[in-house]
Image 1: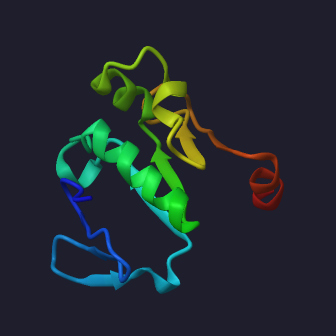
Image 2: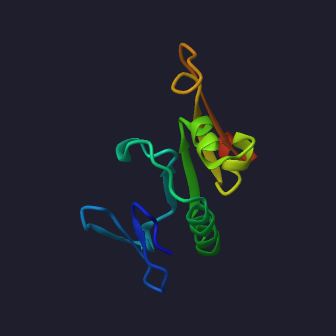
Length: 121
């Protein structure tokens, strides 16, 4: 699968290729983090089909797929999803900011399964 912003080669020796050309092997990868939307790329979104394919590959390889969803509500609107729940579905865990998109003074939420949340506490 090829991500629009970061290359992901699908193969037995899978690696991630960053825009600067640096390659990271999967042997030491336990978690892959995807920011939605990509702040450093001007608020662009990875195409939804790519998000789903990356999620599938992570699941097959035992790699946790985390969403830095500080602005997940904007991402949901950009994808045309009716709720942030739909946008969060491909991920094992999601970070949500209460102040970046919602305008609260402060606060955040970390979402995931019971074991993950217990460990995070």
